[in-house]
Image 1 (cartoon, one colour):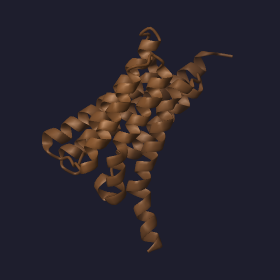
Image 2 (tube, helix red, strand yellow; image 1 turned 30 degrees about the vertical axis):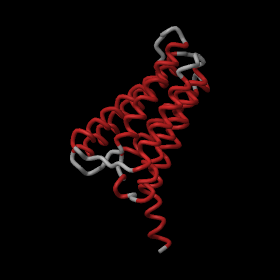
Image 3 (spheres, helix red, strand yellow; image 1 turned 45 degrees about the vertical axis):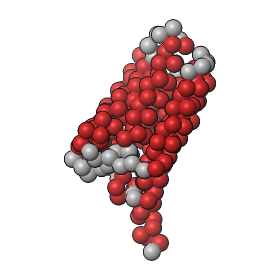
Image 4 (cartoon, helix red, strand yellow; image 1 turned 180 degrees about the vertical axis):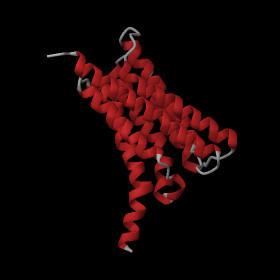
Length: 204
């Protein structure tokens, strides 16, 4: 059996996923810059820190040998940082009483996993902290679906689905944790901003 066939397919899936992540981030940044979408700045900055540190933790645990399975996470961390900066710079951001509390909770989790060298502990706690930081955005999307509707959510959902698919060829639960979590999160955001309003209209 020719091994180059599956290898080429895996790389095609990975590159497609990378391109979709970048495109979705571009769409999100453009909407924030034009004032069509308000960024929850603390959430985006928190996500950037948590995902970035998770990448560092996994690389450190493997003697700093680069792993392309982490590239989507690194791209997402960079995109989250740029979205947060764009929202703050343009003034197109929203904030609420719970934002700081969620960020503090996330940073607390980040501080805890700094004490461990085990990549499993750091990754799991980073994802838990990431979810805590995401709570304000989920609340806003629930209350104001139109204000958080962007095609970036389904695009990123597809990107992480492709990333998870590529990992199946060389399976690792550690590498699969972020894609599974982000598939769930972007799927929920897609539902809240697109599907839930339509279902409510049909029921009415």
